[in-house]
Structures are given as structure tokens and as C-alpha cells.
Length: 352
Image 1 (cartoon, helix red, strand yellow):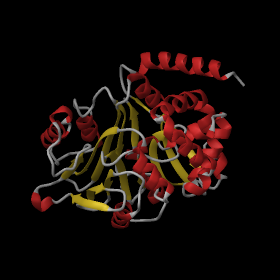
Image 2 (image 1 turned 135 degrees about the horizontal axis):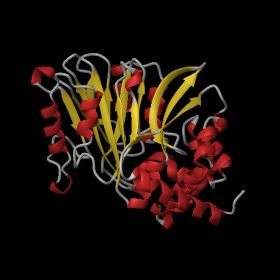
Image 3 (image 1 turned 180 degrees about the horizontal axis):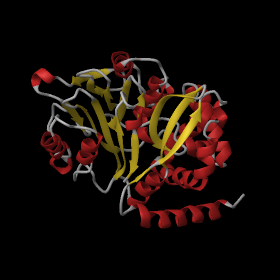
Image 4 (image 1 turned 90 degrees about the vertical axis):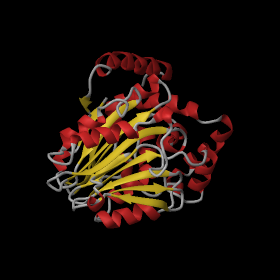
């Protein structure tokens, strides 16, 4: 096993080499299968083996976001991670840490990064003229260029299977057991956008009090045999460790919504409504009933691009084009995902 400093240098070298390729154009993310019938501690072995040095570097870098006075709390979470986090997430994190030879505390920080720092995102659910529901999202991470590139380099798409059959799929990062977005085939899609409401200490208090991190809730709900309405209810009412926007799409007409969440429940649910000529809902990182700040208005250009595209003939290519419109697409975008639960083959994750 290479010494830690050698692994860090190798990871930085990988970052420099890959940056020269990925900074110029998007590419489809690597695709993996996670066998839910396997022991939780072993499910991510192939991913870890392919991304060991990159995950090691990501965990080290993201640790810097934690104020020193809060590190003892993360050490407490790490010591009892399988009891604090709902099953199987703690067991999976322990397995990844052991396989990658990463301190468990650092991997816990990586997996709780949404509760620590801001993700700027754009999510859209739209109903095409033919009635098909399309769901797209950009995940933006705004800390610094190196961290964004690290996350781009560990972006993956995963199929979660039982008995050899895919139950649900998601976009994620290697070493990260939650899902920023995903779809339950023939049922629903979901993505999360950050909502700035509260602080790290409040988020950690909720976590220690039994609330679930949003990315883990998404995966938990995707793992259940629910329809759109049932998923909407679960995502709206489950206690979570940080506020968020949860964007949900279905397979039937007008099944598309933005759930505005505080930590305890939904404060608003905003849905597609064809009678009101609302054939899509678009969410960035601000309550939809309030104007976005002039310093970060991705909503207005996004709405303009959607209306220019129009519902007639709207499809995955149309969604990708909208999500590639500046500043919806910007230098903080790490990946774009396109989903449609009615068609599992329509799900693609693109590294930007």
C-alpha cells in the first residue's frame, strides 16, 4: 500500500491529467451495478477499487469544510455510524472506508457534505406535448475549481439490483452512498437542490436526533415500491437533517412537483398544472414564490429557454439543451442528469 503522501500526489496527478480532458467537453459518467443482495460492507467494492485514490483525495479536501470545533461531533458520528444513520448506509460507509483505507471520520464528512456546504443546483420537471414526463438536473458545487474537478472526476451512475433486476438507478459520486438524484423505473424520479435555511450546527443536531440526510432519504424512497403520489408524501413528510428542495417527476400526466422543505416537513408543494399553462416546474435554490437574487438568477434564463423549447416535441435532448444554457450551465456545474421514469433507457449522467 502506498504511503498517504504518495497517494495524495498520485491523486493530484490524476486531477491534472483528467482536467485537460474534461474541461473541454462533457462525457458520459462511468456506469456501475450495486448488488443489494450482497453484504452492505461489500456492495461498493468495485467502485472503490476503481476510484480509491480519487475518493481518498476528496475525503481529505472536504474535511477542510468542517470547523475544528465540530470535528469531535463527526468523530462521534463515525464511531456509531451504523446506529446514527439508517441501515444500510452506516454499514456501507464502513465497508468503503475499510476497502479504501480511509479514516471512517473523513468518509463520514464526505457523505454528509450536503449538510456542511452549499450545492447550487437547477432541477426541471416537464411534461412534453405527447404526455411524457422528463426530469433534468445540473449539480453545481461552488467552493473552488479543484474541488469541483475532484467531484466531476468521481461522478458515476449506478443501477441498484436485486436478483439481477434493476430496481432503481441514480447519479452519485464514488464513495458517496446517498443519491443527489435518481429514478424508480416505471414509477418516479427525484432530485434535490440546496435550500439555504439554517446552519451546520442545526443540521448536525437534527442528524443526532434521528433525522435522515436528504441524499439518503432519496435513495431510501427510491428503494421502495411506491408510485409518484406515495413518493411525494414520503419526501414531503420525513424528518431530514437539512432544508432542501425535492423535485419529483412521475409517469402520468401532470405528475411533476417541487417540494420546498424545512427539516420537519414540506412548507410548499408546487406542481405542474396544464390548466394554468404550467407544463414545467423549474427550481434553482430559492423559494419559487420569491424573486431570485440578481447575483444568482439562473431561474429567468432557465424559464426563457424552456418556453423557447416548448412542450411540443420536448424530449431528453431538449432538456439537455436547456440545462446547457448559460448561466444554467456554469463553471460550477459538475454533472447533468437526464431522466424519464417511463423509459429507464433515457437515464444518462453527463460529466460537465
